Length: 98
Image (cartoon, rainbow, N blue to C red; front, top):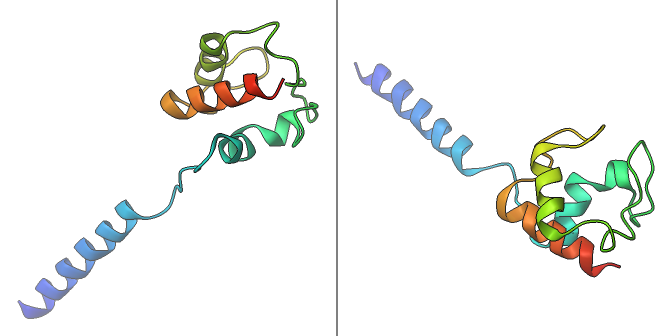
């Protein structure tokens, strides 16, 4: 019985550690861009690896449209690259980079 309690306690402890760790949220919009977008759109917003340049978005898209694209995808860009508040922060940051 004692051994069984130790095993159950250990499993609960591991479950708690798993729930609390990993998936570090980006602290800044620039870090979120780096984590979610730069691989396809380039470190300097110039495009690459199939993603278009993002260095002149303000004339083509609103913040809401950019959030929609990040959440739902468009063309070759898959949905879910960023969502909710993170997508809003990235969109605001992108529009300020113009």
